[in-house]
Image 1 (tube, rainbow, N blue to C red):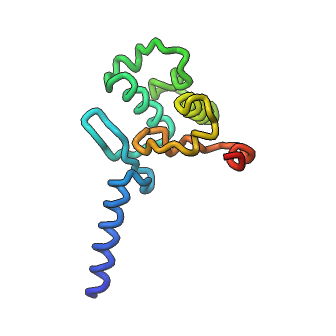
Image 2: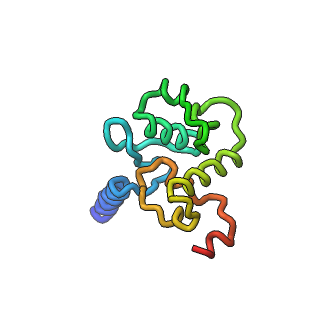
Image 3: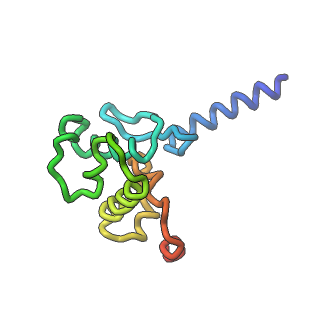
Length: 133
């Protein structure tokens, strides 16, 4: 019985350390928010919306009225309506390439674990892109 309690405590401590380090736990991800770090359930749609909020100082009305139409995420910024998941993933990939200075290989080396797009940056990579980096 005593060893079982020890394992439970050790497991909780490990999960806490993972959250502090920004390691993904299920769908809960630690990202930068308006008032510091926060842990939220995140999917691609929410990740794009969170990134847009981050870009526009966490003012929701600014996200809706965003005029930066050259941004790859612009079409998906409002987190509403029917959206094609493949196009959304492609937009995330293009945004990450832009953020990495136009270098696709640098996307995989990204160290910004508090970016909402971090965990979705490399999904759908072609095998040649994965092997090239």
